[in-house]
Length: 96
Image (cartoon, rainbow, N blue to C red; front, side):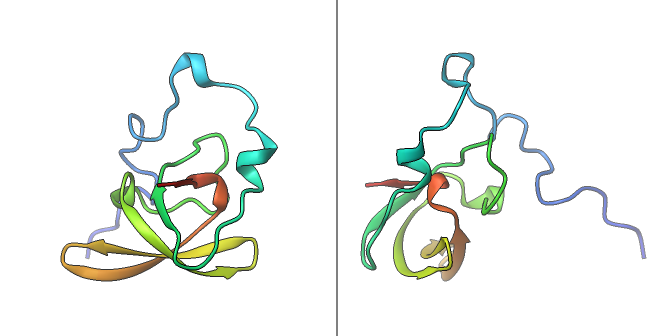
């Protein structure tokens, strides 16, 4: 068998970069935001914080918060006709 080249952040140079104008510190309000089960959220990565980031295929998807899991949230999304659960830190979520 051949060895797999690359990790989970492979081919993400364009997806997980911020425009020059938006670089800098992340606001604490966004870092500590709260969601309730049933809230609709969009997966929008904050590239400066790698903790609790999701796989690149899910970037831009809309999902529903199912429950709080430690400091992160379980978000249920539809991907390729299936329902999947992704564990995401709140800094990578945006209320819809």
